[in-house]
Length: 413
Image 1 (cartoon, one colour):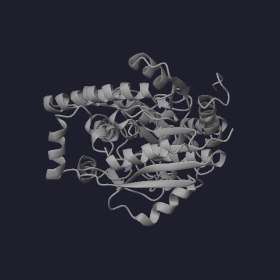
Image 2: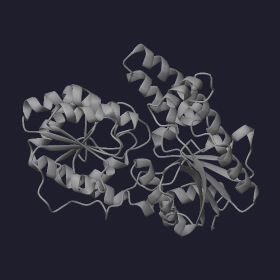
Image 3: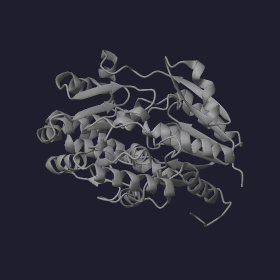
Image 4: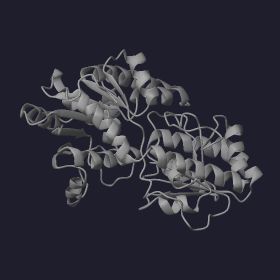
């Protein structure tokens, strides 16, 4: 059955420079071939409006509401943080509140044009259910992460007492908002069975339909014919996202010195958009670390690297970048949190370690053994090619949409 879908998002997808944007972009391109998709989102102030037509790559029609984000580090930003102390909402949700967006969503819902409203990530819930509104259209929440889990882990790894107190408050507010919002949807879909089980257990949800696997474009990401740079490692990700910032800092402080003791000429490239000052300082004080900032294409960096690391201590959902590296035939060393929710096997298609010495040991072992790297890279690519192309992922997601709208009542993938 063809469905008319209203897709709610916090912003446009271009530039496609985060894991969440990549997942949404690839899924929407496939989904929009099956159903007409209307995309409604905030438009950040200062973003080039000439890129708006690019949304036609992944949607049939679009609606935009102008929105201004208060720049971090400014007096207004700190005033917002202070004001949020008296709010019931976590700051990561409250800063996106928009009366214009809430009004638009309500108008579109009441038009009677749509069979299904999909909230991409938790954030659009603040607009869909604003002021206690109950949508007339069936609604589905696509949970890329269990957001409160990220904040809980951020609290647990925070250093100072002040940071722990702040992150505890944000975690508790996010948990309350997430529990209440998830329960309002007709259905919830996660990106891993672990996330789905967590939402059922922690939030008491009975509307969790199931999970969709993480996908990868196996034609775009593939092994390169060029030679590798000897003893080269890369860390890929948005370097303004707190879990990546924490992971890079932890790796540089606790793990990197152990690796350099064993392999003096080893180098690390931190590749990803908007590196915060803490990340830039890593490259400034250590000549063996290079911070690239935003790059137009991550494939050349994967092509030259012998390993990719994912040293995350905080996070939720699943990491697309792991499957991208695997599709490129690049072996991955990750913490278990970093690889959480992915169908990978330690020692076969990935190397997993959680403690600094063990993580360093897995990196050193692979860097010193070309044949081990080759076998792991080949098994990793074979895994993603067989199971995790985007068309197969969207087929599962579409099954949930169809079932929720009654096309196949009682039948879920």
